[in-house]
Length: 116
Length: 113
Image (cartoon, rainbow over all chains, first blue to last red; front, side):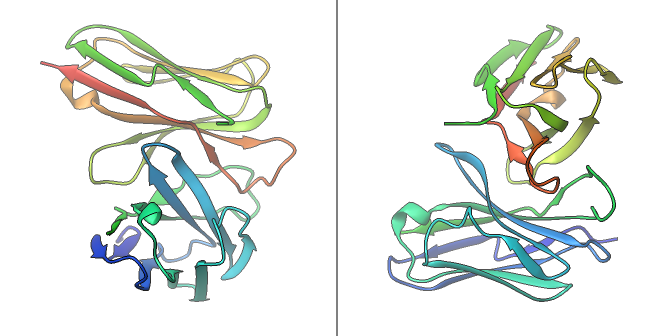
């Protein structure tokens, strides 16, 4: 079975441009998480979905960030307009957690974003 | 301020040495996980501990959950170059959402041949 698939793997863009990151979770997983990783702040949770519904977006830095999950097999994280401080590796992770207090998060390989 | 503090931040050792990595917090966790991340990849789960005082072994890796469920340690015996990577602890807070994982700051381990 394929793991979590993210695209693009790398993106270089200029300040002010719109960036869209994509994620395909593992089939059957009911939770999807978006994380951002930087040297300074480590791995930060941005938002997570349960059965395609956003549950907690308190980690989203500001209104420039938005995330959607139109169906169980696809999610996007959009930054508009992008700024240099958004440069980071963005990870998508999925898990099957319903009825469980703990479970393994399966991460994608990440999307490395550089905003010039 | 990191909810989960890991130490040391960086560790470089020779092959064959032993090491311990620590994960500390003032919060109580319902469960704690350890992940390893290699360059260019996402973190991969190593272990989950849920009971205070629990000890789990995974080959040369020994994981311990503190009695009060506020801290954890990872001990590696006879480290090998293949153990090189970023080690992350991650906890679920007892009083918070059971679905949210908070990650520690990470320990970057380099094992030299």
